[in-house]
Image (tube, rainbow, N blue to C red):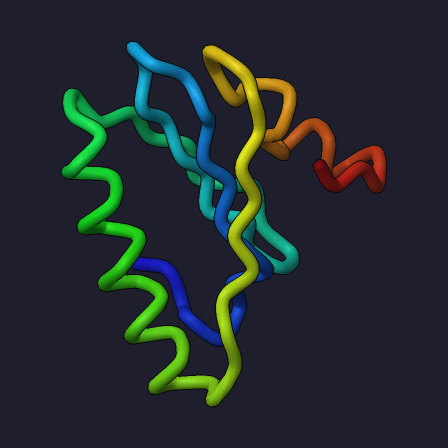
Length: 86
């Protein structure tokens, strides 16, 4: 479970056939997922934005990148050890 107050942002890919997203979390590795349909990802994003706003009274930063996949925007445990945050 991700603590909403620890979320730094949300990245989605702008690609016609893959629908990935990444939760960026303070002090943790990121969580990367793929949906089978764009509408599924949009539903998740809308619910998350609503709950984040309700919890923190702030808007959740959302980033869109023109990539087929989001591996290069995904912070993994090894990155954290090196002080790298993507």
